[in-house]
Amino acid sequence: MILVRVQAEPLDLAPLLPEGGDTGAVVTFTGFVRGDANELGGLVSLTLDHYPAMTERALAAIAAEAERRWPILAGRVVHRVGRMLPGEAIVHVAVASSHRAAAFAAAEFLMDWLKTKAPFWKAEERAGGTTWVEARASDDLAAARWE
Image 1 (cartoon, rainbow, N blue to C red):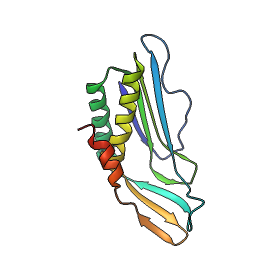
Image 2 (cartoon, rainbow, N blue to C red):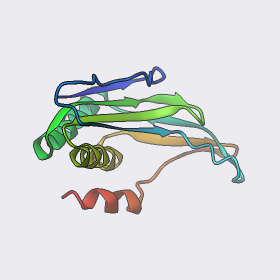
Image 3 (cartoon, helix red, strand yellow):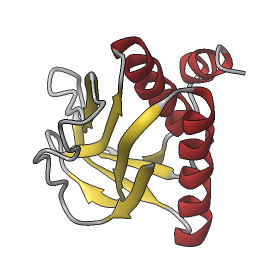
Image 4 (cartoon, rainbow, N blue to C red):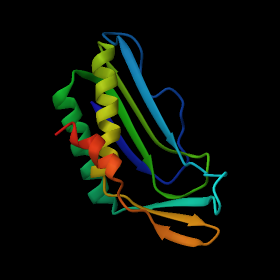
């Protein structure tokens, strides 16, 4: 079962999955807020907003779809909301399976669908002001391969 959590607090990246039993592989992905320090007007902060019930339902549906497609023994999806600074962890996905191929595929699927199907709204604060982040075609393309 994949556990899903949305929280404002910083992510605790301590081990999230138990070892042993039938587990043959654990794949994890942690995404961080990029600072774009080398760009003019580099990122000051990233703020994610959401409607809690809607977001939790969407993340649970994404997790359930991953469990339907792959033999997942355990998993965790933790996503932050609120204001975050460059270098802070924003999302953590962990998947345990008996075989590495399933663990890798499920983790990649979870991230691709989180980027495109999870209802989060992102605002970037830069030296020149704050703007909402538009969806990226590259994220849609990555998610489309799982359709």
